[in-house]
Amino acid sequence: MAAKRVLIIGGNGIISWWVTQRAIQQGYDVTQVTRGLSSDREPLEGVRTLRGDADDPASIRAAVGADDFDIVANFRAFRPEQVAVDIELLSGRIEQYLFVSSASAYQKPIAALPIVESTPLRNPFWQYSRDKIACEGLLVAAYRDAGFPMTIVRPSHTYDGGNMPFPGGWTVFQRMLDGKPIVVHGDGTSWWTMTHSRDFARAFVGLFGNPHALGAPVHITSDEHLTWDDIARLLGRAIGTEPSLVHVASERIARELPQLGPWLLGDWSHSVAFDNTRIKTLVPGWVATTPFSVGVQDIADWYLSAPSRKVVDPVIDAAWDRLSAL
Image (cartoon, rainbow, N blue to C red; front, side, top):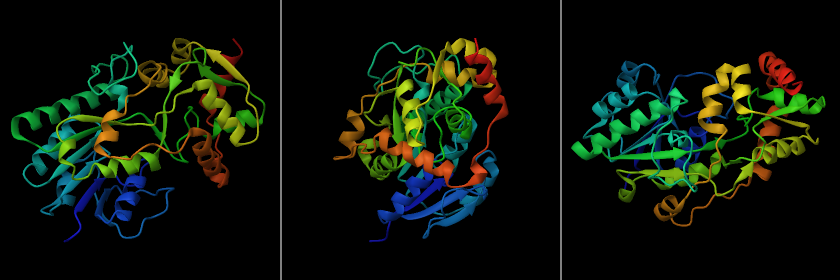
């Protein structure tokens, strides 16, 4: 029997690179659509690459053309018009369409924990989340009205080496090494969920071709709950230092750094814990096996392995100086 053909739109990202790798390992025939931009992640052998930009629907149409695929996973759909093109282009042609949504779409403030897939979707703070909700709405309608074979996947904070969980990238490590304080929103005790991309990929690829996964959303997150103070301290220990932490109200940070405001007020400042019963039912035996105390070393090693990555963000650095001096 021929291997199932998988198309991954946006295949070199923080999550999608690992999904591509896992799919190859599992024997799928994998094609990527990418923009062709340089990536810090190693090229993967055995992948066919097409050129297209998800921000330009016409380029996706041209790249896919009349090719036949069994499974399509879109990691680069952020607006409903992008999803509308996918539905039109792929209807009647595929076995499954996986849309990567976001757990930030859940109602804010959060009414109850743990968050389940039926928790209402509403985020008045962040346009990114509202756009993901609108994308989901189109897919739900397409499934109900025409049987479009969609699966909605909602990750929370998923990371690999290149994804620092605080703003500023290397700035965080440099401040720690210099003995300068790290600004943590709120009182540092809100819960957060960190999921390594390799764990996510095992669950995600496990959904390929699963008829029980059609028509409804599913979480892929770890079961580990960390406070933001925990996360900051683990980052420090990964580079051999104990960081100094300063707690600042989220609203004050948002005023100082307005570009981070929607992200912070619409997602990071809220405690989260997710019910993962459904993904564990759909992919028997799956569990996230990389605690952040282990995965954090990937982040440290990524930054430390290349001098070009040791770049301080002057805007974040100066803002943290001001905030920590209050």
